[in-house]
Image (cartoon, rainbow, N blue to C red; front, side, top):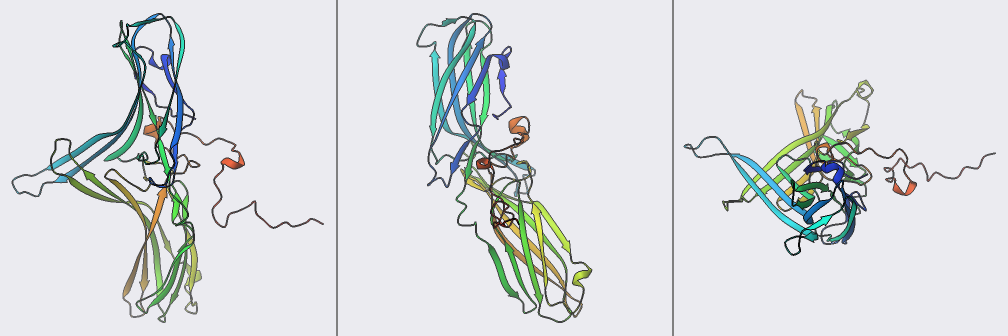
Length: 368
């Protein structure tokens, strides 16, 4: 399904102009150095209800990076916040289907007209960054139709560019297996540190107290999102850097009665962190054009010592969040509406199941 939010100016623009693309989004596989170029084609359709004199018909595809940040003045004489803004166009492509400045204006009879176009998008282009108020990387198609009589027509349609990273380096199980302060031995493992937005993070815990009567009060896990922005003002002023940290989701687990026995040598359990299913609540990892987003799984373990004091074990595991074409967690403000998943998918279109949840590779068991 194509993107839904279509903006335009002019009478009955929605009935006159349309852009149909051969794919819903551009998908790059791998890093900017590894990804292959992607061929994108489409058709600009123009429907005229009456004879119209056309001066020009143009189609633009632009990529724009926007960053803004507020900072508090450190000078005593200057109070208040100052806003740093930066905007630059890093990609531009134009198709001239008819140029009235080089030719005489064209009188076009009523009817429907189609103008095919295509473009090769290099794999080094940055992916779209959405869901952040302070920064964005976006691509936009703009149609411009000049008319001799009446208002000119403009029509916008966004294009999403997705980059799926190389999943191999982080696709194996990861575990922290240590002894902390000679008080407790622990093993904390996650099955995959590369996680698609909209899915979940499964964490396995094993704790073995080394002190008699030491108990675990609770375990809290948080997915922390760190945003680093580099702003170069349009007015030529000095550059500015800003960092924000946000807790995307969290889970707090208090051990129940089944773990209260003093004879218990270890605590073993599993917990799940459900990732948001909207870009407005979480942004994929990226590092492009002064916009850097990264994620950490932070784990906090509170323990009661035999002497009555409390101890805290704090850990952080880097994880990579990416946009998957199989989980369309598109931001509503970009599309105009949530794009639903099809009710039925071909087996080749479905995302592989998480580790430990396979259903199609069971051993053959003959029936009597």
